[in-house]
Image (cartoon, rainbow over all chains, first blue to last red; front, top):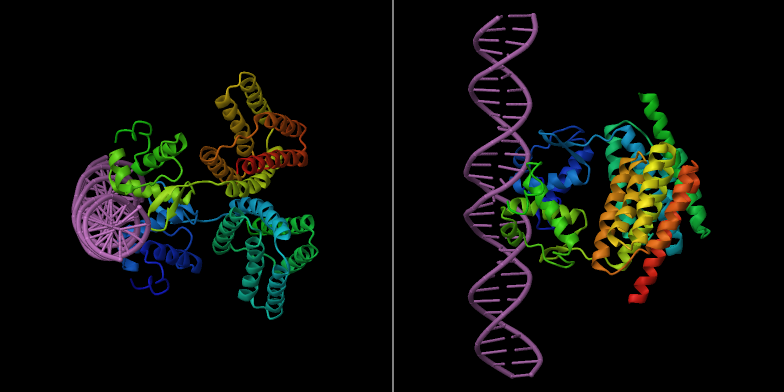
Length: 222
Length: 222
DNA sequence: TACCGCGATATTACATGCAGATCCGAATAC
DNA sequence: GTATTCGGATCTGCATGTAATATCGCGGTA
């Protein structure tokens, strides 16, 4: 079980560990977009039998991290510009919903946590630490959706974030962190004020701007 | 392969057929909410081996039509009132998005199709044909989302509709067809006028009313 | 009668066998 | 030089074996 149970020994399920490992390999680029997910090859590489690998690959397909090619098995999904735009259209309304619900549900604890994420984000920007900046950015969004009290919203936005991460690997796009910081401030202000409508609008505007930015980059790069 | 390949002989994949058959069994009530999805038992009943049944059950779990009980395997999901409310919150913003995009993308062809669905819906109401009424209702929504040009929206709303159907089986709720008809008319009017904002608002208001209705029924039933 | 331990049964999750299908490359015919 | 066909290797998808383990009924005991 080398390379698998090292990280996840908690669950006794090999298929879960394999699935997690494959996700990791996809996000680190070890398995780039378009790479074939050969069940026997992966089984040998991860030193497990084919059954859990097969289960894991099927799950990745259902999560849209992999695609079933006609008769070539599964390959790592390539999230193109058009698909990313579609995802962002959905993300816009979902983040707006999450922000609105978060205002209605949460209190000062959320505000403090968001302020912390924002501070970290600012600090990371000052030191030009891209990784920390991205982490703080994602944390900000995660805090909001997890405070919204709607499990469906959380699940769908988790899914969105995962696929956006994949798209970031497959296509070279950046999400304009400077604008993002201002946007986040506006969202936090609205949440702090307890203004659900303003929070929804600010969150939607944030994602809308990101989408516009991505479209411009896609057109420039094409 | 009795009872499986009868309906779906096209795809050479047994697991797909089993998955479809299980869905059917769930929606017809042959497998009620909470029923155990025993892989060996289903394999014998459907006269296939355990492998495709296992694959199919795992897929149903991922689609949230089944849930993994700790160590009892999978059971048919029970969509409770709270979960249904959460789904409807999401559905509200997604249907709104779909309506807005549909206005921006589609033309008279869509309007005619929607008018047809509406007419059928009215006719079904007059004859008190519940099944036909439900069908026309669902068709109306499907037409809009499939005209929106965003594959993500289509997929997510398909998912929503599936789980709503499951909820309708598991809990006894009706979606107030009379109000729905008026709502649909308002949506169509906005689409016909090419007013994207009005269409979005009308679609959201429609789902919002349904959600309110469901909540009232849940409270009354509790 | 209520409670509890225990054995029989059944199920999950993983390992492995196997047939059919597909793709790639090489050799051959023209 | 180009097109075609054949062969080998590999993969997918289904079938089945198997160990560990949980569930459930049942009889014994207080």
